[in-house]
Amino acid sequence: MCSLYTKFTGEGSSGTPPGGNAITPLPFPTALLRTLQPIIDALRRMPQPSTHPSHPGAKAIYQTLKETQKAYADIRGNWAKKCIESMGGRRIIDRVETLDGVTAGREVGLWVNGIIAVAGVEYDLMLQMSLLTTTGAVQSTYSTLLAPIGSLFTTTLSLLINLVKGNLNKHAFLALAAYEELSNARKAWGDIQSRAGRNENELKETLVALRGICLRSFPEFLLDVRGAGTKTNVELGSGIHDVTSMVVTYLQQIPQVMDAVGTALVTLGDGMWKMGEGAGKVLDKSDQDDERLIIEHFVYDVVTALLASLNSLATASKKPAQGAIFHFNNVAFLRTKLLLDPETPIDDLLGKPTQDALNSNYRTAKATYFDVNFSPLVQALGDGGGRRDVKEKMTRFFDALDEASDRHRVSKVLMDDEEGKEMLQEEVVRLVVPALKRFCDKNIQGSKGASKYMRYSPDDVERQIRGLYSY
Image 1 (cartoon, rainbow, N blue to C red):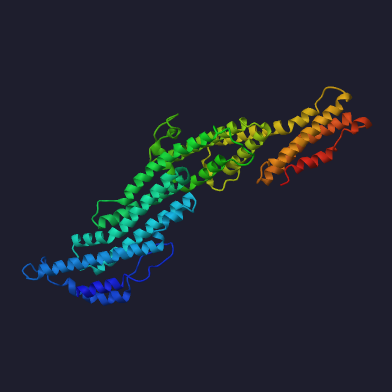
Image 2 (image 1 turned 180 degrees about the horizontal axis):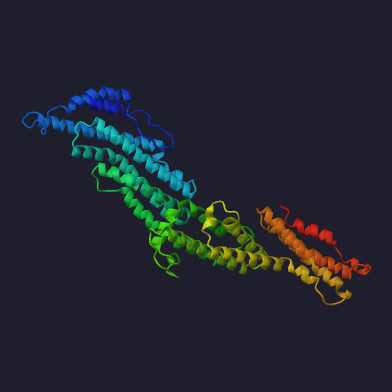
């Protein structure tokens, strides 16, 4: 009967494993279970030392039942591992590398919960099919059954830790989201280990490692943001700098893992992400208001560090006009993505100091952009001199206009912000065209000699200015 039991167990634990990426429980064939039930009942009634201490064959029968039950655990455990691998379990690390950080962390959570679900169903099936039903026998059988699953579980989580450590800035939110997901699964996994009578807890060990990585990620990220401002020997261009895109992407993900970020920052201590500079009090982990406040503090430090780096890069530019465009583009992009038109609720985490810093730096960058690119036009038309200076003023004005036009053909301003470009061109027109018209009314009208210095009419100049932003 034991051989028949093992044979049917093997038949129900073989074949082609299910595919796909979702890990789902593995039902035992109902027909086989019905066939096995009389055999299980008969084997359970066999004499054993605990029930028939004087029976001459009780010990041998018990040993056979014990070996048969262990064989069941080996068969089901290895089949479960094979199926989990086939259902994406072996590819989970490759898959998360192709996803954004938070989504990847959620994927790890689904993977862990899938394994927990499989382990739970296997436990229920084991109770139905156990030949030895004492607490010790059940725990031992379940521990044997879980061994192959636990091996896959441990190996995969180790690969996850190594992946995150390999590029912490890239995978910081994978670590944070995975930490949040695994924290939520901790109790369920602990229950499984308890059923198996195991003291080891692979999930707990992974959480400890992830927690350390998460704590380390905040000061390292801030250090990278600050460090970007020291790389002043590279050609800037006028587009969005890598560090600006990195910060926007990073901050936009925070609302999706608020619990993990808040817990980690509270543990780290207010201001400790600045590597000891300006550390504040360590807040109580249970105080949700303080968790939110400490996240606001961290966001402020990241934003102000980026603004300082952008200012350093722009100031160090060998081409001040292009540096002004670079600075304005990046500050405007940052302000839009975090404050004016965010893609996630990150604006809810911008305290007043952060908002003030964004708005103030935007005004300064915009003013510098105007000063460098268009103030020379207005200054060229300034008061002083007489009609003898008209030629020189007109020459300076149109040369400055041509320089601005050439510069804007190469260096685009507010590239993907149609509303911003429209508002900007209106301000430039209001700055330049009225000044030109006043100059013409005073110096060109009625003077045939002076009119020949007008390369373009005020209307042509307005069209040219608007054309600077037509892309």
